[in-house]
Length: 151
Length: 151
DNA sequence: TTAGGTGCAAATTCTTTGCACCCTG
DNA sequence: CAGGGTGCAAAGAATTTGCACCTAA
Image (tube, rainbow over all chains, first blue to last red; front, side, top):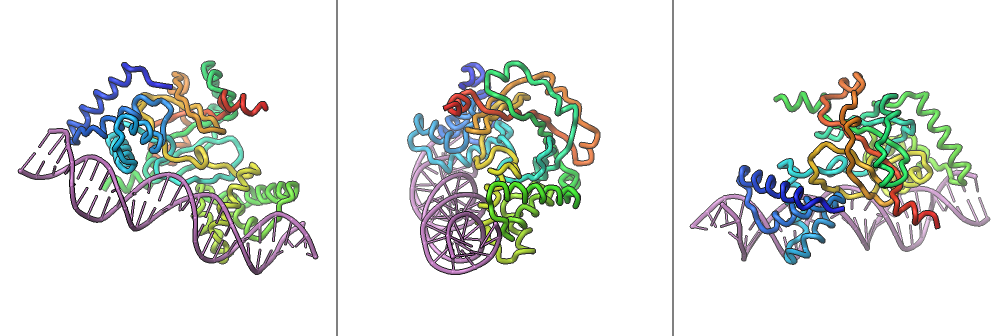
């Protein structure tokens, strides 16, 4: 699963312009770290990014990869899957439900929706595997975080 | 966000019957750990469960909480939010997309669906906060894991 | 030149494990 | 009473941080 060369180039261009606009230096390491995430469509974790970049920049260190990934995330150039920097959380609610997640504080609330439960998946999904469950994740800012932010 | 007492009792009953059927001992610690997750609707992480149980069972240890949570997960009595035991993963695809996730190996593939993009959220969501994005997570078993499993 | 960036190594934080004692069934 | 379960302490894994040197602009 590799992203098309054309798409990668587009992402690289955007990355370089955002960095320049933000006064962030375009170091060899950063360029290759971003390229690795941009071209790898498998949603790699920090270590996988490190392994990939290492082949091209043998001296790169894992902590630079971490620092750069979070910087890219803060710049909005990449995103994290799930809620970032969070531990495993548990749920005893076994009925079919969906989640509202506050991207600021991680607050997660269950909600129910018959409409969502009945969603029809696109045929193309079958190419990926056997589907077991489908749920909707709504991301936003919870009331408490909203009021704090208006200071 | 506390689960109704009636619902908690139902979950406790199910827990006890599943444990008995599986020949798993109903220790004081396990009962209180399950109760904590069952009544806490905030999707607590291991440490939060530990803090809660501690008030009722001061001698309980964090490692017992971990062991018990994974046991409950294996028994299907509780679930984890997101993919369990996984590190933070990064994604450079900024266009609106959804995910197919293999619950076995963690493989995650992007897919697109105009139907999903246009989902109408229930009004009740507003009570939780300001919605930013909505995405669908499809969980299943990927092709590779399926074929391995048929051994 | 020079402020920000990097690599190294050590520190943190979260989670798991080995072992001797304990308690449920 | 027996075997699984627990607490403790130590090990492991993942991630972050302090610091002196390096390099893009």
